[in-house]
Length: 159
View 1 (cartoon, helix red, strand yellow):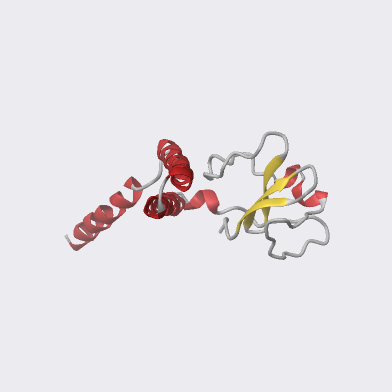
View 2 (cartoon, one colour):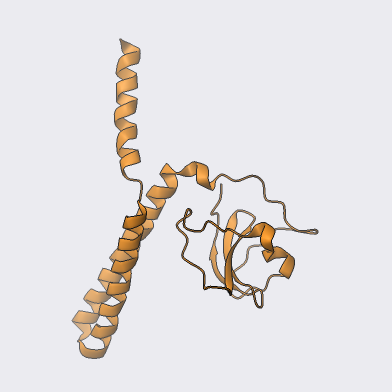
């Protein structure tokens, strides 16, 4: 009897966790809301007063926060996607944290390190032909393949 009660309690606590997983439609909706909030902020800066600008900034901040929380919920419920085999870098590899503007050597953003299924990880679409999502240690980095410059960094992306 005790085992059945514990199993029921465990099931009741797990069900809401799975219900919070973010669907692809929710991601698109969040991105659309952020774009609309940015447009509203631009309009408020052009035509509104200080109060309008303040409200538009607050709305944009809230939309971004909501999108981040939704992504965190998705990542928490789909943890196995973010557990990858150990990273094996190119010869002489030693991890150093990178930031936007850092320049990678070409062997660091070769085909072996590309993250082709960026939608699965809820990453933004890279610019066609010029940028690639690349795995670098536990991080995911958006690299401009023409010159090796880093455009965006997601630290601690993989477990």
